[in-house]
Length: 234
Image (cartoon, one colour):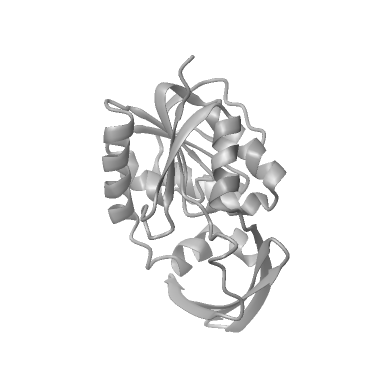
């Protein structure tokens, strides 16, 4: 997968306002877990959120992609970054806040794996802490046949990505084609992403099964909503 490159990832998503999202996230955490000092960022990617959150919290991260983890360690040297699958990781510690942002929960693909991921995250939340998950699109909200294009730069190289949305059952499918212009020519890469389409009820039941009390914020950080959950008392 060409998107395995942390440089490409950051170049393509340069339009994303991570600083503003972190301001919103801080406000959510201030209400949900007053006095929070520690955050675990699950599926942390290249650490772009952590780059801003580290100014206010001690931030650790988990991700499957070692290239992304390397980038995150550079952006947040004080953090502990661990390679792990969000469905079954165990860091043997808990945090004031656990986050899973930018719809990364969709990459688990199935309801069973989504339930396991929520349970794994919930086990890392301190009593009185908060679990915050930014969902992917719901089945009713997903539209096939849409095309998108994004462009960016990696040093002197120019990169662009065109994507086409599709659907197979309860999977959203995104076909992506990349062009990277270098002094030696133009390189072409393609890949296919599959993300699970989960309903609000399915997501809510996952939190409840993990013994969490959950509420849903319709706007969230970027219009995709936000699940805000606390460990159930007793």
